[in-house]
Every structure is written in structure tokens, then in C-alpha cells.
Image (cartoon, rainbow, N blue to C red):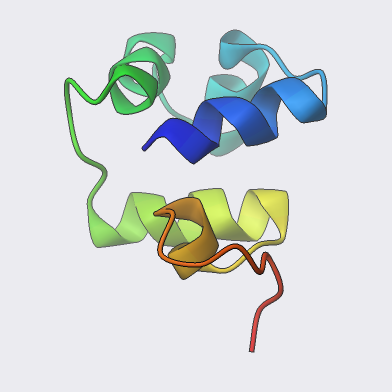
Length: 68
């Protein structure tokens, strides 16, 4: 999930802050960003809501960040 790192950096949010805001572990965020692990549906929804983007945008299935 490469776009996660891009979104996080654009907003100047550290992995630790993102993890704390979502009640997650920083290592999980790091693993999602490197592709070592894939996020489950619940996590994808939480990340998309946090960044106010669509899940398709988060997964790089579209260039349009807008939700439908």
C-alpha cells in the first residue's frame, strides 16, 4: 500500500502519530507501507476515513481521491 506513505507524508504525520490516532502499532503502519503486510478490511476503512479518501485511491486503483 504505497499510497499510505504518500498520504501520511503529504500531511506531515509520523507513523507513530498515525498509529496512535488509529489505536494501532507503529510497526503495523510500517509493514503496510513497505508491503510486508496487507491491511484487512477494517484497517482499510479506518485509513480511508482518516485521510478522507476512497479505499480505491488508497489501494492505487484510481487517481481520484474523492469518495463516491
